[in-house]
Image 1 (cartoon, rainbow, N blue to C red):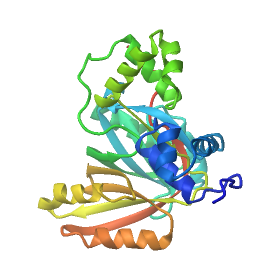
Image 2: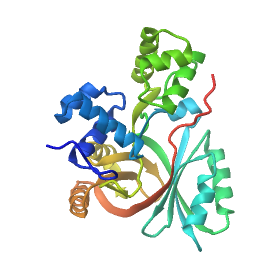
Image 3: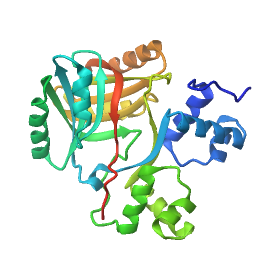
Image 4: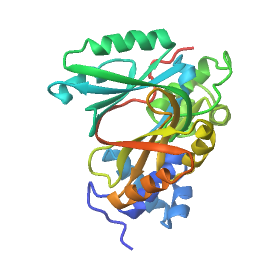
Length: 308
């Protein structure tokens, strides 16, 4: 099997490496090589190519609560005129972590993060005042169950981080694959002490290090959003089943026009059909509405302005 791949083209081995790095962005080249049946040097070359060509960005993503983001919202935006122009205005806002141009009933999807519901309300008022925005429909996340990019689950204990922890988080946000030697140099600790700190931050759900896939149009996977309406007693059992889908990259229980929000990545239209058919066949799923993410204008999952 040849290890030489044309620039910009991902093969099955590349895709397998991307999946591994999505799950754990700090896997060593030796660990990756063993999982995809390559030599260590070939695995290292593949990883470097994925990074240098912009297919992925491996970074540490901090738990939203550490950043003071206790309320998360998904906003579908209807526009009059150029969706690209509106998308750029939305992407310029500090409180938007995701801006995507989509197919379907709405031209754009936006994710907002804020300290409380009052800030979300204020942000929505500002969004509606942007020239070109006609309508906004909002979902509030009540529970994020799966997110391949960010930590989910209980927030870290308040006051559990010190200045060195914050310095490490900033370094990991910049480069999730930085060596312990390089991290140690940036925070003034020994490599062994740095390793203990990083392991503690990872185990404590403070940060998650993984590959963020940069949707450039060159990758073979397409992202599809799915809004689900569920039977009342079925919310949690169905969520547990949806979280096990290999193609699921994001899953949240929500308040609004949908009871749950799901994002799946599939390589083919046939694969998407199979996923949707499986979801619709789950006991308790009443309706499933879909939209395609055509272009991600902004994908920022962490703030680089952390402070102790």
